[in-house]
Length: 107
Image (cartoon, rainbow, N blue to C red; front, side):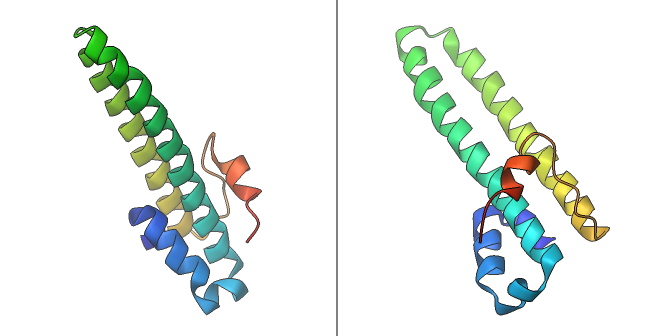
């Protein structure tokens, strides 16, 4: 499922592609991929702005920023892998945490 690998670009291309309108499974996984990207982007924005700002006032916060960044990256990767596996098995199973919200995206 290439839409998970290329994140926002893959989801956008898949949703703009004419075949997607007729393919329920492809549309479902494009929305899941888009949901993963949006949530991860929002969390990255918050972490970057909040913790990076704290880093400048307290250098010991740099270690915490690195740990939180690594955790967010790992969670995004794991969710994408779960989506890929579900797509390869032709299952419409929502990814944990983000999946139910992504299902509500109307396209």
